[in-house]
Amino acid sequence: MKRAADLLGAGLALVVLSPVLVAIAAVVRWTAGRPVLFGQQRAGRNGRPFTVWKFRTMTEARDEAGRPRPDAERLTGTGRWLRSSSLDELPELWNVIRGDMSLIGPRPLPVLYLPRYSTLEARRHELRPGITGWAQVNGRNAVDWDRRLAMDVWYVDHRSLLLDLRILAKTVVAVVTRKGVSGPGAETMTELRPELSNHLEGSGT
Image (spheres, rainbow, N blue to C red):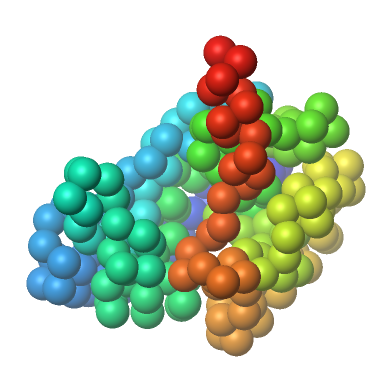
């Protein structure tokens, strides 16, 4: 039933919002150039990698060493508006149609985070990731990682049609109020346990 609801909801949304999608694509093309869409590898159900699609909100600016500049420097004015309004997420409706994602579920996170979860936290991958979810309507990026991942696992254990409808209603409020768009002291999402990155790389994991 959840998959059927995803297909119906995403299909209708793509049809109804098609003029909005075209308009946003034109604005991104005009202000930031090509490509209009940004694709990134994220971990899906059972940790399987897939490409998530969003409207591009950053430039490709790099420093003298060829490394990407900080998010705050690469984020365009249009991109900041798209992120704050969550309109950059609309292309993910295609991911729902493809079966990579669900309308509601834990948000898809970068594949490189997979070794950084505890055994309990890794249970968030028992479901398809969602465009919105329990953590997104309860603080989003403003909530620390431990609480966000705990909320993802809570959703896995308590998911229901009634809960999904509640999340959809709260999503509308969250989008309108634009709360939790950025992480503490960051323009975008803060990195999950960066201290584990060097440890895992050094151990060959």
